[in-house]
Image 1 (cartoon, rainbow, N blue to C red):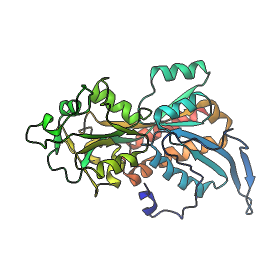
Image 2: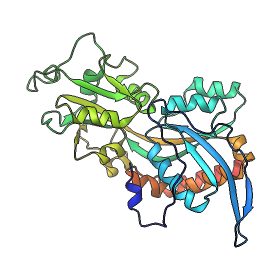
Image 3: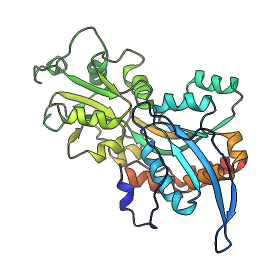
Image 4: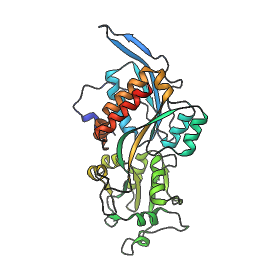
Amino acid sequence: MKKWKYLSMTALLGSTLLIGACGGETSGEGTNSGNGMEQTENGEAQLTGSVSGDGSSTVAPITEALVEEYKAVQPNVQVSVGVSGTGGGFEKFIAGETDFSNASREMKEEEARALEEAGIEFTKFEIAYDGITVVVNAENDWAKNLTIEQLKEIWIEDGKAKKWSDIDPSWPDEEIVYYAPGTDSGTFDYFDEVVLEGEDLVRSAQLSEDDNVIVQGVASDPYAIGFFGYAYYLENKDRLKAVKVNGVEPTREAIEKGEYTPLSRPLFVFVNNAKIKDSEAFYDFMKFSLENAGDMAEAVGYIRLPEEKYEEGLKKLDAIK
């Protein structure tokens, strides 16, 4: 996802962002190493140090854009981010391996409890809105609008192979082919909560933490269905069709106004409070992120928060420091 490159902004320098595939590892252990200040040739103070994060593939495009922009401002601060899914990111955050964790869902009680047991205090920041988008193949001319009950019927495991005609007799007598985010994904967890309501996802679904695998799968099979974040649909809307849910099409306006329910959701970044206090580079990167997250979210296809939300986030950040 590189739409942010088309913004008319200052020239961008290469970043050290490392986006991995499914289960990718965050590079550069020993976070916040060598943080400090150094003088440039013209006598200006320049931050140095390293910052690391991991987590949601849905949040990754926003973070990628932010890291590129930040590199132009603070070229001596290295920011590395892995993409192992919301759950995988929290595992590293709990282990103290990362400074921040991207998430496309709220933290679970057991994750918060594990952080408490590890002695890690954290703060949650909202950075954008997203709408989980249900997609079908471009040749699919029947599943244009699905209710939540129909989505539940399609996606819940019931011990038999399902055909499109099982959902509506007028639809093709062909088996449904499923593609979905992996179980470490916050998108999977959110879909499980609001659509499946805790029931098992169909066992035949091909799961991946890499949303591009889902795009490829659905685009290559006329009887396939999948779901992922809204920005990935926008990037591939020439190859896929978005399904209306309860009669509402996933659009920026519908997501922002709360009309695209229940599949709209906020996106988060969780930070390690102690590392904010200890690292001027990490604090500065988070300050930059909150000041620019709205622009970067819009640039890559998500929906910005109301400005007061970012202002509240900046106040919370300063309170940590």
